[in-house]
Image (cartoon, rainbow, N blue to C red; front, side, top):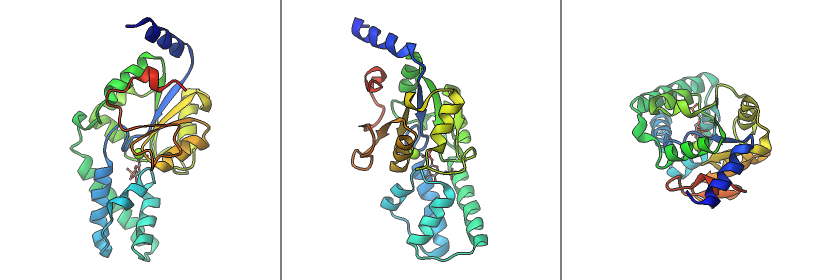
Length: 228
Ligand code: B16
Ligand code: MG
């Protein structure tokens, strides 16, 4: 290892810092399963969700996602109907994710988590999903996390900063010392509103509010990426 790199790593280790990861689209690609489940649900009211619309649902809670879809479909629904559809969508989604395994961890993620741990960062999950823990268990990712904050722990969904502020609080790290990894513009906005750094994973045009954007974790050197 070069002297420069060793020096950078020492500086990183001395400070109490955290990396907060979104789940869907950052660590695993469950967006495809959400898309499938919402498309199946749309058959109830003859509506076909497009890929562009699915992009807008990333990071958005289940209840808010249904409201948006009904708005796009110009479909009025009673609360009872909505509740039944939320259950139907989730049952469908749970069936789709029931076969998930470690092979579905996105490229470069495990190596990146290892590097981050070695640099002394604490690691938390900040996901809107109420199914986050099942996914972390099925993929074997759960052991990397010092704290898990998901849709079951928050009142307000992204772009509200609550999920990330709760993550920082659970780790006892100040928000300014937190770096958030997000694939959704609502999530990047939540991170910025929490006073945190945001690294976008994906398209720089979609994630224009992020401090940095990378296409994926593949081949990423944490020691370089995390220096601001
Ligand atoms: P669930 P993230 C989000 O997870 C998804 O991106 C979003 O599409 C989904 O509607 C939301 O979780 C709720 O998920 O129905 O499982 O509670 O990207 O914040 O990890
Ligand atoms: Mg996401």
